[in-house]
Every structure is written in C-alpha cells, then in structure tokens.
Length: 156
Figure (spheres, rainbow, N blue to C red):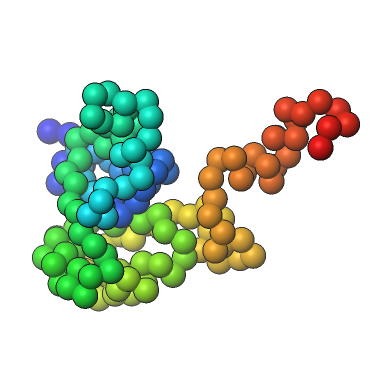
C-alpha cells in the first residue's frame, strides 16, 4: 500500500505546474481525476510526439484518470458534485477569480465539501499587482533579469 492511497484529488490544472504537483501525489498513491475541456488541454498537442500522444502530456499525466467536461456548461457543477463530495484535494491553476466565475471557487467547493483542501496555483499569487497576469517560465526569467544575461553587451 502506498502512503496516500486513500486520497482522491481533483486536478483542474493545465500545462506544467499543476499536473506536476498532482503527478507527485499520484506517484505516492493518490487517485487523480483530471478535469479537462472537451477538446482536451493544450499540453496534449505539445511536441515531441510518441505516436498519437504528446510525450510531455504522457509523462505528466501517467497514472491519472481524465474526465472531459465543459466547466462553462450550466450543469457542470451538478455533474461534478458527487465527485467533489468525495474529494480530498482540489488543484486549480487558473488566474484568480476564474474558478469562482465558473462556480468552482473556494467558497462554493467548501460548501459542498467542508474538508476539501483547495490548492490554487498562479504565476504571481492570488492578490497583488501582477495577480491577474499569466505567468510562465520565460516571464519569470525576464523579470528576474536572467534573459538579459544571454545577450551580447550593448544589444537590446
């Protein structure tokens, strides 16, 4: 038996940070249910490919179950409610306020499941001057000055 095999995690995240966090939980035994748009998340289309599959997507999402649902659909919350009631952890990676607008914000989820651990991952935190900006590795490198170190002196 693995250390956290009794945990159920709902993963609403995309790209790298959230899927990597839930991968660590999956590797420790948690059951992960990924919530994806009906057309699939963007990482599914990233190269390199392993046949029909994106290698980065396969690496980050091994051992997880995917559930396709349109979170903007009027019945999305009711369709997911039975699973939310059983979940231990919810991971989301949208800009601040998006989950609340969709009906899946912290307060709404805690009303359904008071013991739910709600993890919000964002580039610059949930509040502050950059909270609503998308954040990716290249942004952080530019802000921190690291990208400037790759230029020749005197070049823009």
